[in-house]
Length: 526
Image (tube, rainbow, N blue to C red; front, side):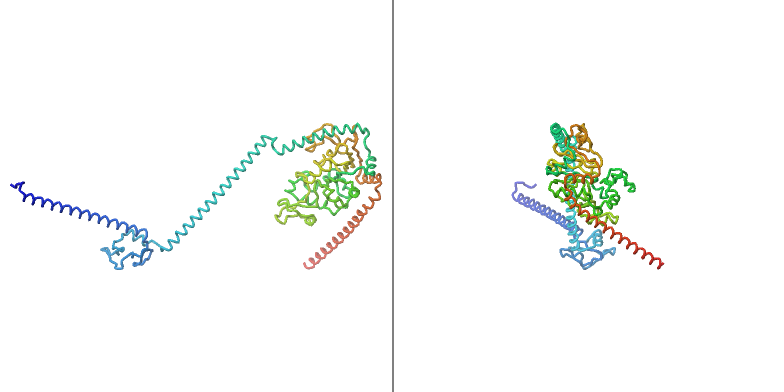
C-alpha cells in the first residue's frame, strides 16, 4: 500500500500528472493548428478557383505559357499527363484545375484590352439611353402642359357658352345693338323735328343750287356696279346682269363664283370671269370723272365703292378719297402663306387662262376682292365712323343696296344730311317697323329712303341711267366747262384703247399666219 502521506510518493505522482497534462495540451494545440492550416489551404484553393473562373479566361488556341493580368502563369511549362492520358493544367501554386475551368478557358475569345473597350462602349450606350429617356420625359412633360392648356381653353369656351354675356362676340353684338337703338331713337326725334320745320321736301334742283352756291363742303358718295355699266361692265342683279351670264360656268348658284369656300375648292370659274373684268380693258364713265370734278373743287370727303374694277383710280381719284369696300384687282394675296403680290403678277396668269400660284408655298394667289364669307377691309370699318357723321350731302349712285354692311351706311349720316339717289330703280324703301336685328344682320327693316312719305324732308331720287343723271346735275350746277376739260382725258384713253385693240388684232393675225406656215411645213415633211 502506498502511503498517501509519504512525501516522495506525492512528489512523483504530481510530476507524472503534470507531464501528462502538458502532453495532452500539446496534442490538442497541434491538432487545432493542423485544422486551421487545412482550412486555410481549402480557402486558398477555393479562392484560386474563383479567381481563375473570373479573371483568367484564355481564348481558344491560347498558348500554354501565357499569363494573366497579374503576370501569373496560367499553366506550368512542364506538362504532365494523368493516368487517362489527359494533360494536367496547374496554376502557379501547382493546384490542378478541373475540367469546367478548362472548358471556360477554351471557349473564351478576346483579350483584356478588348474587354475594357467593351465595358466603355456599354457605359457610353447606357449614358445615351439615359439621355434619350430624359428627352422623352421632357417631351411628355411638354405634351402634358399642352393638354392642360387645351383643356383649360376648352373649359373657358364651355364657360363662355354657358355664360354668353361674358363672351366677347356676344358683348360686342350687344354693344352694337345698344348703339344702333340709341342712334335710331336720336335720328327719329331729330327727323320729326326737322320734318315739322321743313314741311316741303327738297328737290333735285335744290340740291344742284346748293352745290352751285358751295353750301356743301363734305360730300360722301356711295356707288355700285351701275356706274360702270356705260363702260361695258355688266352689273350683278339686273335682268341682263352678270349673274344671268354665268350659265356656262357650271356653278351650283350664281353667287358661288364670289363665295370663298367654293373658290378654295374650285378657283377656275372665278379666274375665267376675271379675264373679262380685269382692269385695263375698260375706260371710266362720266360718273367716275364727276367724282374727279368734286375732288378738284375740294368738296369731296370720301367715296365708298362696291366696285372691283378700279375705274375710280383710272379716273384720277386719289387713295385718300377712296374706300374700296369689296376690295379690288389692284393687289393680291396668297391664300395659304398670305404673301402679298401686285396686279402685274397675276395679270399674265389670268390672260393665259392659268391659276396664279405663290412663289413660296405654291398656294393660289387670290386678288384682294372681298368674297362672301370674308370680312370687309379694316379701312372701311374705320372710315365709315369718321366720314358719315360729318357728311352734309350723301350721293347714292348705281347700287341696289342689298349687300350688308354696305347697304346700311345710308343710316349713318346725320338726320339733317340730304340723301340723293341716282339709279335705274328705287331701292331700299323705308320700313316703319324697326327691326334692329334685321338691320344689322342684313334685312330691310329699320330705316330706308322716305321718298313718298309725308314726313320726308331730305330724300331725293332721280331714276334713270347714272351718266344721264350726272350730266343733268352738271348742267344745273353750271359746271360744263370744267367737266368737259376733265373728260378730255377720257377721250385720250379711248384712243389708246383703240390703238391697243388694233395692235392686238395685228399680233393675232401674225400669230395665225405663223401657225399656218408651221402646219404647211409639217405637211411637206410628212
